[in-house]
Length: 186
Image (tube, rainbow, N blue to C red):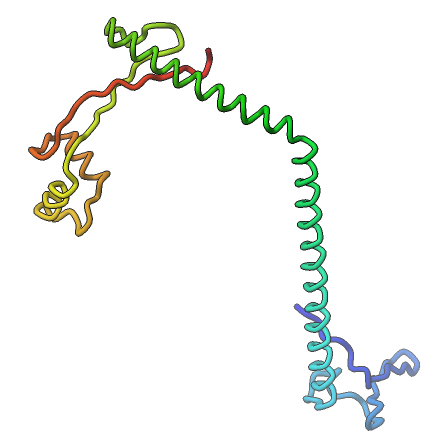
């Protein structure tokens, strides 16, 4: 429950053990304080308070946004300085990542070569061969097939390939393709 602010025109007067709320505008007891009537002056006051709260919150939000923007700019400046300061290190990281990728490619090639020569799917510890089903088809023919089977106006490749793997279609050639895998724990 939101409490309304007191009317600035009401003065609280105490006589003995009783309190009276007197309106300064007409020097009579305030009827608003007792919830009896609407007061035009009090309603104007509430509107002013509401507008000033709104305007104050607009200022608070504008200041908060400006502060956040300054923090973002400072973070970017510090990050840029960090990248400049650590340029050599960052370059070394990129080179090491590229070297690891190149070496993994070479290991995959050697694993495929060993499989081709021996037929062994686990030619050495940490590497292996996984055979994946490869589908080859003419997309235009596959699209015609999809239309004939009421699949879609556009070929749903994922669904089409699942169906082609499950029950071979005349327009699809299935073959097993070896794919080298590398254990993450070498």
